[in-house]
Structures are given as C-alpha cells and as structure tokens.
Image (cartoon, rainbow over all chains, first blue to last red; front, side):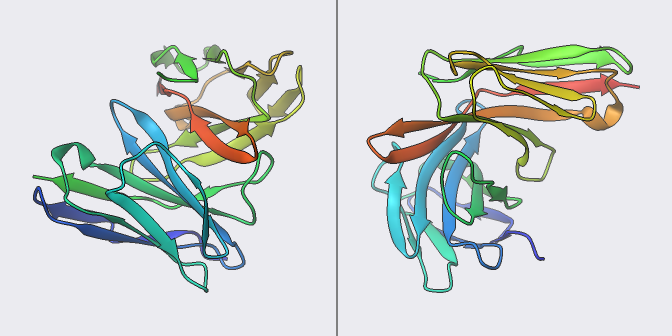
Amino acid sequence: KAGVTQTPRYLIKTRGQQVTLSCSPISGHRSVSWYQQTPGQGLQFLFEYFSETQRNKGNFPGRFSGRQFSNSRSEMNVSTLELGDSALYLCASSLAYGPTDTQYFGPGTRLTVL
Amino acid sequence: TQLLEQSPQFLSIQEGENLTVYCNSSSVFSSLQWYRQEPGEGPVLLVTVVTGGEVKKLKRLTFQFGDARKDSSLHITAAQPGDTGLYLCAGFISNFGNEKLTFGTGTRLTIIP
C-alpha cells in the first residue's frame, strides 16, 4: 500500500508570492490534516478535511487555506508569503480523525521564503 | 503557550543506557500518542494510550499515561543507535466536538555508539 505522498518536496519562494502544496493520502483514507513544523514552534495543526469538508481549523491567519477533492487528495495554499512561513509542511491521512485513529504522515514539503 | 511540555528537550546518551522522556500538561486529553520523527521524514506513530494509568510496551519502549490523563512518559531500556530521533508526544483535546491533535515541544534523542 503506497504511503502519503506530498509534492513538491522542496520549494523556494519570495515574500509576497503564493504557494500551493499537494497531498495524496493513503488509498481509502478520507481524512487529511495539515501541520506546520518549525524549530521554534514545533508541530502546529493547520486544518483537517474529511469528505471535502473542513472540520477543524488551527490558529493560523486567513492566508492559509486548503481544500479537499472528491478523491480525498488535498491542497493547501498560502498567499502573500512572509519570511515566517518558512517551515516543513506535513500532511497526514487517516480513515477518520479522532483520539484513537492512526495518522500516517507524509515526508513533508520544505518551504523556504526569501 | 505550549499545551504539552516535553522534557528534556535534548538528550544524548551512550548505547546501552536507559532513559525516560516526559510529556506534561495542565489539560486533560482524550488520548495521548507518541511519535518518532527521523530527518527528512514525517512523524511515525509509536503508540496510542487512552486510559488513565495505562502502560503499553513496544519491545524496549514502555509508555505510561498518567492517572489523570494529563501527562505521559516514555522509557527506553538499553538504548540503541537506531533509537536516535525526535520524539513527540501528542494529545487530542476535545473542545465541543472539535478535536485537534496538539503536539508537544519534542525531545531530540541521540544515542552514541
């Protein structure tokens, strides 16, 4: 069974630009969640989608948005990039999203904002 | 403010030694998970504990959930170089049906051969 895939793996952008990251979940998984990982703040929850609906959202500004398609693939978009958006963006998929569900993480997309 | 504090933040020990990593919070969690993350990869789930006081063993790793479900510990016996990595605890906080997985600050473990 193929794992969670994320594209691209590395990305370099400049301030003010926008970026779209893609995540393909494990086949059969309907929940996709996104996290931002930085050395200073650690791993922080961005949002979670289930069956094309955003069910949970973390404390990030509106510049961070996402969506999920009917095949469960998900994208997240960051507009008007800031230097502080440089981070590893991780996507995780699971059958559902709850206290006893196993989340499978992808390798992440390393975003550098110059 | 971090809801989940891990200690120590960094730990470097010799192969064969034992170690314990702690995860503490003032919040009560529905469940608590431990992950290990290696460079260039996403976190991998090691264990999920749900019941207060629960103890789970995974080979040389022993996980314990506090009685009040506010804290947890990970004990590694006879550490090996393959145990090197970033260990993360994470807990689900229930907030009127909106559950979010909150990660701890992380413990970076290095096992010296």
